Image (tube, rainbow, N blue to C red):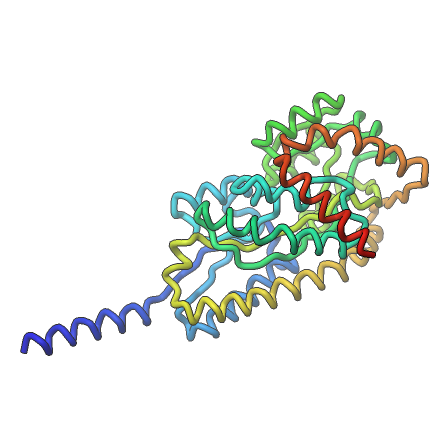
Length: 331
């Protein structure tokens, strides 16, 4: 009788562990209906299908859960358990993530960026795991350009503007002030109102973000010069990930990798098309001549000492340069 009771209890424990539902609450700044939002919803449906309904994903898009700093804080206290965030947000958890997209004019092509990202990812993902987060997939957000209320053709033109910078980035703020700029630290969720009121007159982001948030409507001059790539990733708290059976984890990772690849391909295809769409609605795209490009390159040489060791940890900065040069020499 006692033996039968023990067997029954073990059976119930095993059954309950396999039938346990895992509800994942994911926040993102990606706007409702944007390519990122649609791909995340598709990914969530794949998670549900692959797990026979055991894993369900609820998405909070468009910054409704706050900016990326707020989202990370809410993940740490358990209000959220997943996020799709940019390298800006990732670098608040693991500063070394900044090396991927916080070094301006580091890359001349997607291929260079892909190579550096592939080389640096294992170490970054390991550090993220140590901080309590499971890395799910990479995907792109596009190439960053400057948008402003009047043309920005050379770096000195930025000094005429009030420049949006991410809140809580003291090093970024200090760098811009030392270089003679007028930075305005804000949460990304406050940028729309800041542009409408004139509190901010220039910002840098990707075309898809500028269109999705309608920020370009208040800053219709775009410098058509690829400043840096903006990457994004989906992460989940380790405690939440551990609650998912290993077999289902593997299925989820496969579905998520496909979603990341599909999204990256879509963003690359849409980058120029989106600029054309914004042009139809009043955007003025400014191509640069060689003299203007050289001024931006000189400007980068000037700001690299500010970035290395402050915005981007020195070792990661040097590794990113090394891998970029390694790729170029192989070609």
